[in-house]
Image (cartoon, rainbow, N blue to C red; front, side):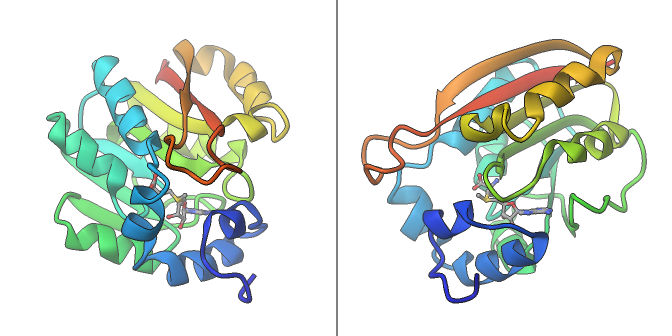
Length: 209
Ligand SMILES: C[S@@+](CC[C@H](N)C(=O)[O-])C[C@H]1O[C@@H](n2cnc3c(N)ncnc32)[C@H](O)[C@@H]1O
C-alpha cells in the first residue's frame, strides 16, 4: 500500500484497517480539493439530505467521518450536534479544524468503539462501506450505540452491497430494525474520471427498533 499515491484507485485497493491508516494519513491534506471537489464527490451531501428528509435528528454519529464533508452538510440542514469517528487521526484533525463536530473519536470500526450504549438518535456514513474499507460486521456495533428509534442513513457502494454481505446482513438484522428502504444515488458527478463516473451507492435508511 505505502507505494501507492493517495487517490481513489488506491482507496478501492485497501485490504486492512492498517492500509486505511496509511493511505488516509497521506491523503488528508489533499482530500477535499484534490479528490472531493475534483471528482464532484456527491455522496456526503446525498446521505445528509436523505437523513434530514427522513426526519433524522441529533445527536448524530458520523461513521468514517473523514474530513467532515457529511457533517458540514448536516449542519447546514440544521441537524446537530454531530460527533465523528474515524480510524485516521490525520483525517479527523482536518475535520476537527473545521469546527463542525461536537467531538471526534479515533476508533477502528472493525474492533468496536469505546462509546456508551444508546447514545445517538442518528447514525450516518458516506464512503466508508465500500471496497477495501469496512464490512457489514460493524452494523452490530452501530446498533449498540444507537438509541431505540434512532434513524440510520448509511451509504454502501453497489459494488459491495451483495458481494460483501451487506444485503444479507440487513436481512439478518430482522426485527432489530424497522422502516428499511434503499435509495440509489450517484457517488460522483459528471466531472469525475471516466472510470469512476458511473459508480453508484445505495443509502440504507432504517430505524433501530
Ligand atoms: C472515503 S473516506 C469517506 C470520508 C467521509 N465520510 C466522506 O464521505 O468524505 C473513508 C473513511 O473511512 C475511514 N475508515 C476506513 N477504515 C476504517 C475503520 N476500520 N474504522 C473507522 N474508520 C475507517 C477512513 O479513514 C476514511 O476517513
